[in-house]
Every structure is written in C-alpha cells, then in structure tokens.
Length: 390
Image 1 (cartoon, one colour):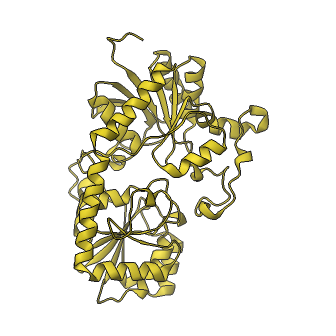
Image 2: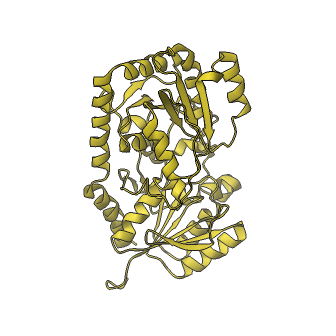
Image 3: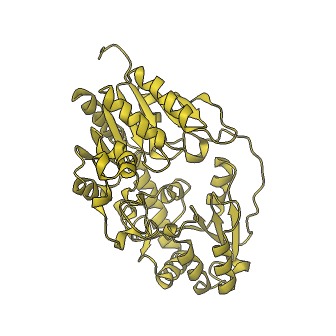
C-alpha cells in the first residue's frame, strides 16, 4: 500500500447512511473515519426518495434498487481495491455476501460486524426471545455442501479476517462458531444524531399530559406487549399517557387487540413513523421518561438517545443493555417479561425527582465516555491492524 495514499474502506450495509439511522454504528464509525482522513465509500439499498449516488458527512454513498445492480456496483468498487471491505449485518444483505466474496477473491482484508448474532434465524428458533433458547451452532455452514443457503448467508461472518463486535455478548457465540480474530471494539457515538437533513414541519399529535415514551420496532423482542400489560398497573395520576413511536405506520392488529383487552386505548398515543430527527427529538424532549422493555437487544440505541436529551430510562436487565446500563446509576433496571416489575419501575422513576436527576446525570456521563477519542482510536487501531496483517 502506498503510504502517501488515503486509506480507503468500502462499507456494505443493508440499509442506512441516512437521517433515520444516523446513530447506527456503521454510520457513526464511517463518519469518524472520514473525519480522520479516510476515503469512505458506502454501499446500501436505495429507499424511496433517496438518490442513487450522493455525499454525506464525507462519505460517498452508492445506493441500489435491485440485487443485480448492487452486485455489479460491489464488483466495480472492489476491483478498485479498497484497503478494507467491512460488511455489517447478515440479514437482508445479499450484496454484502457478494462484496465479502469479492474481498476474499481479490485478497482485500475483510471485516464483519453484527449488532446481535442472535438475530440470526439459523442460530435460534425464536428471534423474539432467543436468550433462553438453544443456540444451534451446527446450522451455520462453513462449507457449501454443509448447507448451500446457510453457507452464503453466513459467508461474511465465517470468512472475515476480523470479526469486530461492539457488544460483548456476541463474543462467546462467535468463538463457539470458530470465527477467527474475534475482537470487541466498544460502540462509538458522536454528536450528529439530532442533525436534521430535512425541513419537515409536520406537527405531532402529542398529549398535553405527562407521558412515557417507547421507541422501537413492533417486534415482540422489543417488549411492547409487556409494556402494554404494565400500563394498567401504573396509576393514571402518576403517568396518564404512553406514546409509541415505530417504523410501523399503523398500529399492528395484535397491538390494537391487546390494548382493547386491557382497556387502555385512552392512555395510548401511537405515533407510528416520525418524519425526521427534529420531530423525534421533540418527542423525546417532551416525554417524562423513556421505556426500553426488550426481551433481546443487539446493543440498544434508544437509551443513548434518551441520555442525549436528558431523560431517565427504565429498561429490562437484558444482555447488551447491561453492558452500559447500571441500575440506579444511569437507568432503572427490571427483569425481562415481567409486567408487574416494569410497572413498579415506571411508577418509582415517575414519582422520585431525586432518582430521575441521578439517572439523567449518569446517562450524560455514560454518553460522554462513548464519545471519547479513546473509543475512536480503538476502531482506528483495529482497521490498521487488519491492513498490516493482510
């Protein structure tokens, strides 16, 4: 490699490099690398309204609509011989498989990262509640004849020159799979989460009364059903309303049915998709507290967003979250899948001013550590080591 030439990295992800996913690790790390003078190229799927090629935060982003278009773009970008190809995530990332295979063929150092390996439908029979399930290591094929689909699905993981995880709970799983050069590199956060690329002025139908906030996919692993069951156990006088923000435009049928059964429709405001960062920040700022009732998390970014706007967090004591959430220091932690304990936690935090102040101060301290230059150096060192060992 020419020492005078800028280091180049190709980052391949299924979706992202946009305002909605501004806090996702692949985007945060890419921004850091661009700021450090790297040439950063992103390759991802094109969503509605997005351009096919554009620049953001010093990153050159290529977007594709079809697999064939993405595969050809991966070929073009890999033939240009970047110093590193970094594939993030297995699900919905067939172009990432192509990029990984090209990297190995062209002898380009290949890095792989995944927020949560137990999102993998091969490893678990229940992706909504995988922590108590048997992990099926034998389903991950390292050779084509062991399982054609599994082999190609897992290629970026099983053939990576370095598997870089920002959540420690992935480490023993990857090691049990025989993945080489497994490395823990702590998650990196910067100050760009609430920068808005849009001027959307759409108003939000927020309640005037105090409310608790849930932000997340309407998947059972996010624990929205546990939260619904907890709501009747929280006195209206303590916390009248609960606001739900999700990429789901409408209330899922199962959500509506459970709310009706519990007779709590009048206490719920389902916002669905919030159009931009500015609006989402407004929801966070107007909330009284933020609830993260997850059964499983790959890492969990919602508490960090709450920390940024100074809101207390009530969350489940689940792997990944407990790597940075500490009970009564920066969050109030409760057991998973326990609506009574969750309700007690919500009521406790809502009623205790001193506790809320302690949690928000602890959250700010935690966030400051995640934004440190030491964390950035950890990622830079990992990439430099990967290049040096090529």
